[in-house]
Length: 467
Image (cartoon, rainbow, N blue to C red; front, side, top):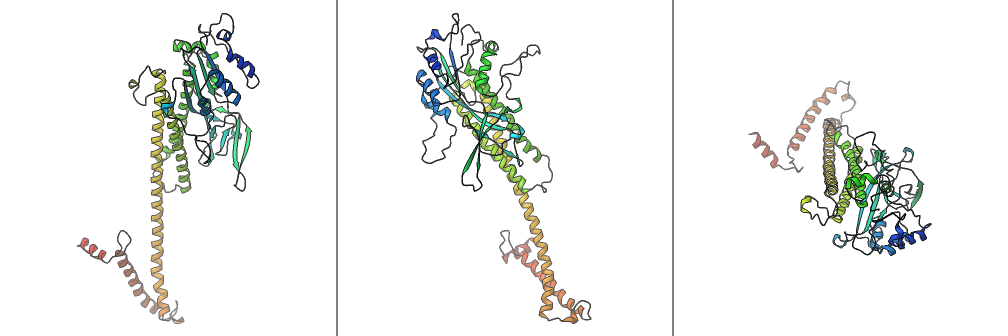
């Protein structure tokens, strides 16, 4: 960055092809960082897209960076899959040097072409190893997917012997996917590598630099929104003057990165708000749920579990970010402004996202309880309907069993069959027996209490109530 607030000079290096040139650049004296003789360098920004051992070695050795910065950024999972693997436990917040480093996990909603919609739950980015979360809603695979991304920042502040420098580690664009599927015997996983082009969902986040309300001054829709590296490079080179006018000073690359990341979280809020609303609305507009299928309810319940799990993870990530950046969870006035380098408007963004995520989580929990209660109501209705059916069948049996019993006990032969002269004798004997059986069954039914236990004392309680 230049002290005269002009467009920064940009040098690009491709490692391992430009390894020697990059090492020479990092070893250069401050005077050699100038792009021309009149250029006055104020600070140096290193944007790194993707990691490999050579990049870690070069920057780690030349800038004397804590190896945990690279290890934490490279880590693609917080879950230990094998019992003998090295520990993946995070560091305590008190052990993180927040004056020099911070790391943010955020999420990018991407949309592939319709013909490339993922039909597997196990999808990841082949370049970064990050998880790509797919979902199946209403027995249909959703076209958008949620890609996990990370941004890690290391900074060398004024007061050191060297130049002011900032290192930002970014994830590469999602251009190649790893898709895991089980084989026919379900005893091992097979991986498929697929080249794919994606677009940001609904056009991506809104431009972080506000435009003047004029068609003449409109300069397009902003960056390509394919990766954080490309977006930061766009704002550094194409929107330098606007960012400096907004901040009133030189460009603070960390604040630009923070704005982009919080904008991604706003898209995430909008996406899950729509999913939850689509499930809340039908429940508030129906009068009769008797036609609701059990399989449909189970599928909706599974979708709600996906929403609750995702929102819980997002809340955990935002809380970790706020701890790293010293952002209070409630009142900004309670925080020490000198201890927090972010202006209050940036802190408000994180607080708003944190509160909205909690609101969505509460709505998801209430929706889960509503679906559980609705499933219980449907189950009770089905049980009542089955009980009525059984009662009807029992009544039919109580009528026909005495009829067959009568003909068997009294050995009524052909002359008592329907249409014969003595058929009336069969009815004279059977009808009193049918009536006696029905009366006896009714009396015995009154003897059962609420727990289904037959007690003679129940008759006394019934008589007392009637008297």
